[in-house]
Structure formats: structure tokens, C-alpha cells
Length: 412
Image 1: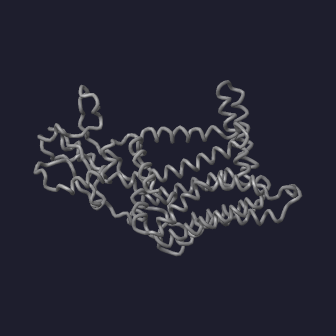
Image 2: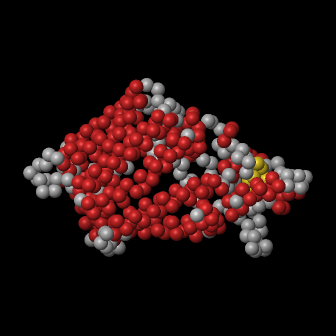
Image 3: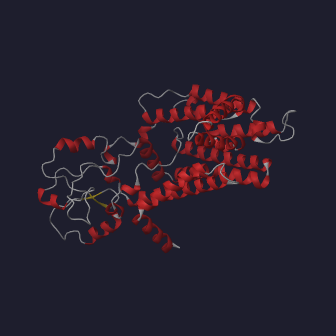
């Protein structure tokens, strides 16, 4: 089994461009499938969930093979005698007639605050790493699970499954909150910040270079462009061209220093200080579970208009209490939290929460049934009358039944 995994990893690292093209193409197809044929939405969501799981594994694989030192610019003080041997990202090794242009910028973009913070906790805490990965995995497959259970076991089984999913997500969020004592970011795992197909093959195999370096540490006394990082891996850094202005190098180093010289990741997100902040975060962690429990409670008290199919989501969306209570709790949590001052990561986190709140408010409950849906449907009908643009109207109209019937289509 391990040999098969190693073979797959070698194949992936050798064909990153092709793999990235296949991922992008399949991901675009998932947007076009719903409404095209029977069970198209199930096939689309299954493919989407599989792509996300595979992409997550690819990200973890790349993070093990790519050294963080590649976020730094080339070394500015390399001897001019070695500049002729410098590696270039714009040269074509198969065609010697193409001139080589030395690289002046880092191979990788500098990691964002979100990446630095989540990467720190993922490497430090086993509980955080497992809880965050489980939370991300549930987010990938929750809609697919809801679709399958609803089709095979009915509405009641669907809502029982959704309760279990929301319960697990709440537990994982509370575990992360207990470990970090800080707001639970979403997503809670590091995200891909670069295009893998644009990476040179030479930087994807640092372990082999490191083993060669360690086997003969004193074979040459000439300075090279290889720099050892804190993990014991060697990274090949292309040299600066002769006569390159130093300021072009220093400008690139702003915010791209080594991790040990940057602001500590724990200072990027302030800890929860008072009862109000803790209460706001506890409400946010359990908001999804509260919403589902209120929907199930409403299904047990049908009204005359919903007595025949009281457990379906379109029927439950007509009730006021499962909609207004979670909205009130979310607004209360927003009121209790302390406004961010100079904490950019916290400000981004709160902005994301506010956008999700607005999204859920417009696409669920009585507002969706009585206001948003008629507006979207009217716009789609108008677009269908326009040549060519009518395809966009049909595309939008094909998604309306999915928003009507599935809880996780608009809930994260």
C-alpha cells in the first residue's frame, strides 16, 4: 500500500500542470450539471465533494515537499562567478537558444495571516489538526450526504442525519475553541495560495537534494545558492544577476522574511478576553445546531397548509421561529463581540461571518420564500427571453429547486 501511495505522489509531483488542469475542468463541469438530466445534482455534488477531498490531500502533499524558504527572494550577495549557473524560471532548458532571465521575485507568494495562524496550530496541536481536518471534510461531504439520505430514506431520516452532522461540527468547533481560546476561523485549515502547475519541478524534491547534501557536506568549497532551512531540508535558491539593484531585492523582502523573524502567529488573532466575547463565540459555534433543532421542532407541529408534507424544507421555510431565533442569536453574538482594532485577521473573520449571515438571511426561511425567490425567478424569466443571455436564465433557474429542497445548499 505504501508503495502505491509513493508511486501516486511521484506521478502527481511530475505532472502538476496536467493534474491542475483536470481539477479545474472537472470543477467547472460541476457548475453546469444541475438541472441538465435526472440525478444531475447528485452527480455534480458527488464530483464536487471528491474533488475537494483530493485537492485537500494534494495540498498536504505539496506542503511536505515545498519548503517555506521559497517565499523569500533570491540571495542578493551571491558571487558573480556563480551567476552564470543560476536557475531561471523563465528560461527553457530544452532550447539553449532561448536566453535565461534571472529571477528577481520569490517563487511562492508570502503566506497570508490566515495560513500562518492555521499552519501554526496544525503543527502544534494534534487535537486542533484532527478537529480542523474533520470539520473541513464534513463541509465537503455534508450536502452529498443530505442528498443521498433524503432520496433513499425520506425527509425524517434526512433531518436526523443533518442533526448528527451539525452536532459533530459543533463538537469540533468547541474543541478548536478550547485549544486555541480564540475565535474559530472558517476555514480552520491552511488554504492553497498558489498555482501548483506554475512551480518548477526542481523545488518539489527537496528531500533528495538534502540527502545528497548531507552525504557529502564538504565535497566543494565554492559558495552555492543552496540554503538550509529550519527543518533540515535544502532549498535551491536562484542567484541574483550581476549588478542587480539592491532595492529591487529589498522591496520584495518586505513581509516575506523567514518565519522566525515575523510576528508570532499567536499574535495575529487575539484571545477571547471577557464573558461577552466567549458568549458570542459559543453562540456562533452552536448556531447551526440550534437552527436544525428548531426546524425539527416545527415539523412536529404542522399547520393546515403543511400537513401533507410538513417535514420538507419548503414547508418548514414558512415557519417564523426557526428563522427569527437563529437570526436574533447571530445579531446578539455580533453585538457582544469586541470590534477589531489593528487585528486584520480578526477583521477578515468578522467580515466573513457578516457576509454568511446576510447570505443565510436572504436564501432561507420566509424571506427566501416570500421575497428573494420571486425576485430571482423573475430576473431569470426576463433573461430567458434574450438571445444567448437566455442560457444564463436557464442556468439560474436550474439552481432554484436545489436551494428550495436542501438545507446545506445555503448553510455552511
